[in-house]
Length: 257
Length: 156
Image (cartoon, chains in turn red, blue):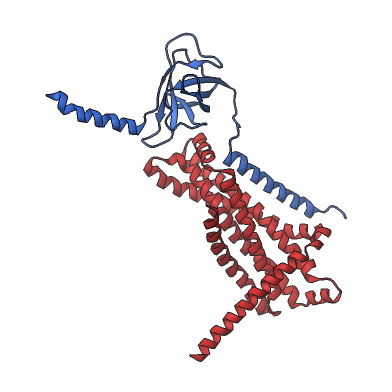
């Protein structure tokens, strides 16, 4: 019984400790971001790994999500004789919720886990310590470029995901099922608002980008410097990111819409 | 600092992002007139357009022959003035009639054109004179109710 209470207490204190360290870490990253501006090559390299290499998975998933939305949406809408509203359904669900959330989940598992593993391994092989010895701040040199690369890449990937999804819905609705092309686009354009839907969706993805990348670099930096430590840190990145994304999505949706 | 292949890839990535955002804001959110093919403009005035929307299809015998390009209230006679862009391939006679129809009971509204018999055809900027308004469900039910109420009295 007391053993159990002790575990709970230790777990709570550890969680609070981590939260505090993560906040201080975020502050340190922001304070050391000057390096990123001085050496844009670092940022570009990280954007290549985080963003460009995620293009394929984002495009393919976006296309299939849009196609499924088109198919399922059509099956339901056609019962009410309003299959013309398919464009609205696909565009609004993608722009408001599915695009930002799914792109962030994919980004967390594709790029976030890679960042954690890379930084954790650098720590395990004492590369971070070596940098500190050479008077190179590892936060400025290693962490900050990755952080900003993630924050900048995710909105781009989200926008691409949305576009691919809308075309996926278009392919199923207009090309395969044979709805009117003009109705698909016209109903979409009437219902979608630039500020309410497009901009708010992208704002969401910026928040998700900050959360996912911070979790990824933090877990890497905080990882136990062993093989098992790096592996469990990578797992934690994906699990925590997924939970944080879904919880944040609820809060942001409640604020925005 | 030298240019590297990696810069090209990141450049492509950023360009894709900008293209996606502009697609979302122009094509998905707002109106762009990306209409292919030559068209000519006509207009028609209706007493009531119901739920007709800009970009709704214009059909003749069920085939799409053009789009609605603008809807406004004519301040002189307080009727709705609907501008149409029709495919150049199709010429309609001067006594063509236009009516606002609904696809299905609750579906999207569109304009149906019925070809007339005159030899002269409508040209750019002409007005379609014969029009009939949209069917408004509430008014229809209202008429039905009043006629139901009147029937017993007139029957005797």
